[in-house]
Image (cartoon, rainbow, N blue to C red):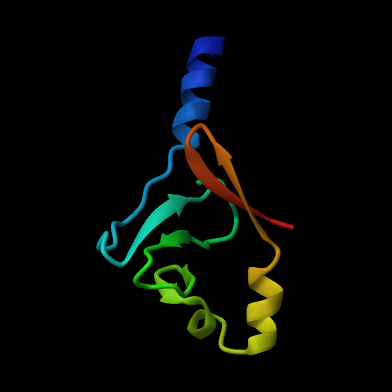
Length: 89
């Protein structure tokens, strides 16, 4: 495999594919396709001020307050090439 083919494959592997939610609710801002976690981060519109994870209110997604605090806080959002990605640490 040539360097050009490797670069194309690498770029294709990192493309983000999302099911669309209605834009008046929120706008998806991305995740790494190869990430092991299946968490989707959304930039919520001004009308809906709560955080959404996988399209569900974060507090409902994590049923216990302790889980909500432990699981949501470690997410770090970074911007690369005009797309947002998350990493958990």
